[in-house]
Image (cartoon, rainbow, N blue to C red; front, side, top):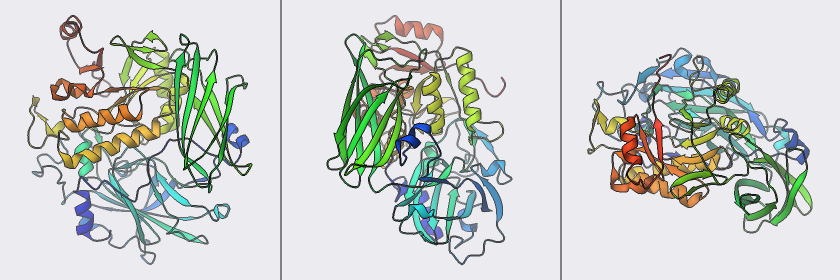
Length: 534
């Protein structure tokens, strides 16, 4: 993908939201030995590309440095920029703040899927890397944990792939493009606006660039590509069944498992065989310690993947044993009624924008616990993976929200009106792009016990497409419930949400709903709006 016409046609096509991107998977870490996995040392199969990159800024695609990805292109006139980080916070373009309207409203008359062409900040990045010698004979891939809003990737002058969705990982296989000996050139071009921008109309600062970690990674020839841990309780919530589904690439193998408690004692163990790249494991735990916000007890699931008796990979996956369910129209955790005392949290730093540091995330979590919050809605997109680890550890319930908001297509100047440009509604060309966002979030985050509810997004009206997303969540993960507030505006697909969710409802309105034999429990998903220091 090199010509302006090729780039523009992809940026404006809602049915092209990825090219050559690898399949989404769980965010587990993997090591060569169990000792390494237990100690959580730096992964030898991962190499960070964070740091100073070469950089060129253009106001639109037409003015980009054509051919910059080529090996013989002279990048000496490029500036330097820090990755991860937003370009608007490093001297290029300007941060824009708008709420429901789109940033181009009043500048260009556009309807979906078209985007601005005269002003579409285009960021061209270049860095160089060498492949570690110890990765000889193994695949080499690259992971972009967050890029806003759309981007192309080249390696050594060859086109690798394209991706949208600012808030979930995009990964590509570089194996066929790299030089095993010597230097490799990585080129990335990021576009501020794409078709995906119509789906990212959240009430926040409009920024762009590579704003989360970038790293190379490799995999052993036999590798657990994905695992899905589920827990169910029985015998009056005293005992537990921990089940794990694996997707494994490579040779047929044996997976040896033991579940270790907080004192380091094994409480269950078992093995399973990999057949046709899948395996299933079940472990029974008597007198299980249960996970909750008040008592966030975590077990450690220790896994060794063996081929012909030799360990080829080891994984330590934290497990919170809990059961979340609807009983008689009331949400229960571990058999007890649950009440959320929550907050909507944008992932934002006053210094770094959405490129939030681990220290800032931990400060937020500690602050929320100190002031007796027990839940967070990740408004209105998936957060960085580390935030979920903190919520597992400290004990916060999460509504994990799909990166979807189309507020400006159906509400203008306060007036709510379905119209020809309302998104995603039932428009078939926007179905797969929103399902992809839901899948990318669920597959990455599914092993975090802190997540109790999947959310279809925020302020995106209603319609059949959102209902299909909710059905995907239920089909893929029966251990959690589904949330969506927008059915309040469109009751045609009331089954989209498992709960009645509203925002800024007045007390009499809430009482009226609860006093009239409600079909669903009630969540006030937003209230007491605070902007900045207000």
